[in-house]
Structure formats: structure tokens, C-alpha cells
Amino acid sequence: MTSDPTNSSQPPQMNDPMANAEIVVAELVEPAPATHFIGPEVVQAEPLTDSSHAAPVTETFADGVDDEHEAHRTAGNTSSRSWVFRCGDAIGTFTSHLFGIASVIMLLAVTASIPIVQFLSFGYLLEVSGRLARGEKLRDAMVGLRKATVVGGIVLGIWLCLFPIRIVSQLWFDAYLIDPLSNQTSTIRFFQVALVVLTLAHIAAALICGGKLRYFFWPLVAPVSFSIWALRRLAGSILFRRILNFFCGWISPSLADDICSAKPIGDWFLPAIVWKRIRQGNLYVELRDRMWNFVNSLRPGYYFSLGAKGFFGSLMWLFLPTSLLVISSFVEGAAAGVTFIFGLLFAIPIFAGLPFIQAHFARDGKFRNFFEPWRVYKNFGRAPIAHVIALLLMLILALPLFLLKIESIPSELLWTLSLVFVVFSWPAKVAVGLAYRRANRKENKSWWFIRYPMVLATFPISFAFVMIFVGTRYVSWHGALSLFENHVFLLPAPFWL
Image 1: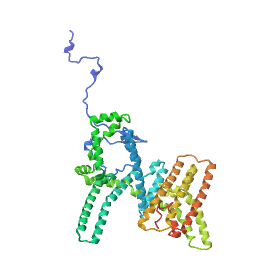
Image 2: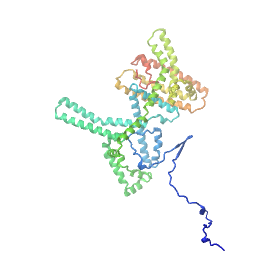
Image 3: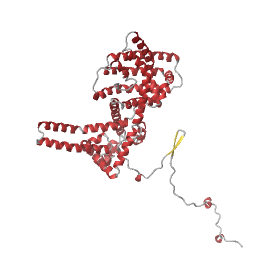
């Protein structure tokens, strides 16, 4: 009896290999977070979250991103733009950097003229040499440009906004002196109070929106900004878009897209930005956190500590020769000659090597590095020419600044002289850091017929500088004691006595 395969309880054996496959119920799982390989370590990235539940991002203050990484973070946003707009962005970036440099110099000058706080400026200048000594690039020596741009824009914006108040206040004061009870005096007083209230509200709104310099002048630029925004919106229509593509396509394929891209009003119009921040409901908390993060990103404690350690470490090297040179001015006879000669013999090698000892200290920030002069000498042997050039440049830039110490000026104007000292001290620290970096990149010493003459060349350079340095005691306001106000190796503003 044959069995009918159709009535069999066993499933037929098929030639299809998928017949034996098991059916498994699929289960949705979250993707595993990506991993990034950084050197020998593996760093696990945070999983992506729904953007609709993410915390709102604001531009209240700088978010603490390091300046050297900012270019890499924003490079991908401009790769698809036309060359016309990229040139405009480059000009804007260059202008912003110039303003940042000016802001850094002003901030350093102000802090250098304030007792104790001046360690911040000295620590900043040491950090310039330290970054280059660690092998970083030259642009990394421009420490904190983006943050200084924010601070400088806020200070300049507030100062300009207060200018009308100063004018009205002067008018009211003049009217008050003439007739305190007149109607003109009362009217000007009313306008003065109203202007103060409106100006404070205007400054607060600009700070809430990010503190950018243009936010302090939005009533003046609003008509122009609205006109440009309206034209860009109009250019985005189909008709005008075709016309733009026809006339601008030969310049750049993406030029029409850049012209037609109009940002929402809430991204650039200050009242709309303020209203959006208020609607979010966490304005106070967000401002507090942003302000705190921004102040921490400035790292005032680090620069103060670096400046204080650098000051006392340098003073330990300079105290003996400077004291001997000062004593030689107060004694007579053979004692004056002996103390002067010994002070000169100690000062020549110290003045020649201390700039590079400071760079060696700033590289790691460890105080014990001040007591490792042999390491500095080894670095000198690997790049002797660069060291001699840096030493010569540093001492040449320091010589004209002694003239500014001839006359004493009021304390409220010290920052003006500090401004000049900072401008000359910054390139000197850069030159020393570059020489140290060049030595670190070389493994072997230079040839002896190059190394030994360069070592000998440091002594006449240092000797000439020491003689000029000692001679300034006869023209400086503080006399011989001014030798302790050594702006070359100590504080950039030599008025700490």
C-alpha cells in the first residue's frame, strides 16, 4: 500500500534551503553607542537622544570650548558654501581675531596694573611660552582669543551704551547749577532717569542674548538687517531663484543658495531672541549656569597659580645678583666695587638662561623645574641658534621699555604703561617658546663648532643688557630699588614696588 504524500502528517522535504530556516520574532533594540579610538584608549560616545527632548541651546556666553578646537568644530559647516561667502567668513574671522588680540592686550594691561591680580597677566604670558614648549602650534600661543572677544565685546558695548547717559547727566548737572528748581532741570532729570532705566534694560537684554557686540546696537542696525533679511526671503521665491541661478551660477554653483538662506527672526533679532528665552521658562537657571561655566573656562585660578609660582621662582634666581647690584649703590669705596663685580658675575649667566628656565617651568607648571638648569642647557645644545636669536629679541624688546620708568604717573593711569609693556612682552615670550619647541623636536645636539660659539655669544649679549639694566637706576623714579622691578623676567608691568 502506498501512502499519499498529501495526506502525510510530516511536512514534505523541499529542496529550498530556506525551508529549514527557523522563524524568529524580530525585536527592536537601540543601536550600540559608537566608539572612538583615541590613541591606546577607547572612548565610548554617548548615545544619540531625541532632539525634541534635548535642552535648549543658547548663545548666552561662550560654552568653554577650547580655542584650538573651535576651527575643527565649525569647519564642516562652511565646506558647502560658495567661495564668496567663505571669503566673507574669513574676513569676519580675521577681524574677530584682531579684536580678540586687542581685547587680550587690554585685559592683560588692566590686570597687570592691579596689585596681586597682576599674577594673572604674568601667568598668561608664561602659558604662551609653555604651550609652545609643549610642542603646540604657533596659533595655540594666542590663548583665549575667542573668550577675550566675548569679554571685550561686552565691555565695549556697555561702555558705548552708557555714553548717552553721561551726556544727559552732564546737561542735568549744568542745569542744576544754574537753577535747581527750573522746569528745564526737572525735565532733563526725568529724561535722565528714563534713559538709565531703558539703558539698563537694553544691556540686560543684550547679555541675555549672548553679549555679542552687535546686540548692543540692534536698534541702529535693525532697519538694515530687516532689509537684508526681506531681500533674502524674496530671493528665495521660484522666480527670483531662477534668475539668481542664471546670473550667479557661473560665479559659484552654491552662491544662489547662500543668498537665499535667510535665518529665522528668532535667531538674530534681539527682541525675538529675548522673547524666546523667556518662553523657555528657565532663563535664570540657564544664565547662572552659562555664566559660571564661562568664568570657569577662563581658568583664573590656573593662571594665577602659574603666575605666582613663576614670579617667586624667577625671584629666587634674581634676588642675589639684584641685591648685590642694589647694595653697590648704597655703599662706598672698595665695598661698592666688590658687590658690583660679584653682582655682575652672577647676573650675566642668570639673565642669559632665566628666560628658558621660565619656559621649562611653564611647560609642566611644576615649581621644581626652576631647579633644573641642566635640562635647559641640553635644550640649548640641540637648537643653539634659535636660543640666541630668542634671547637677543627678548632683550632688545625690553630695552625701550626702561624709558617709561623715568617718570612716576598716577596709579589710575598705570594701565596705559602696562599696555605698552604687555605688547612688547608677548612676542618675547613667543620667541622663547619657539626656541624651546625647536630644541624638543631635535634628538641630537648640534655640531660642536656651532654649539660652542653660540654659548659664548650669550655672554656679551647678557653683559650688554646687564650694564644697561644697571644704568637705569640713575634715571628711574625709584632709583636703585627699581632694579627689583624687572619687567623682563618678573611682572610685565614693573610697578609692583
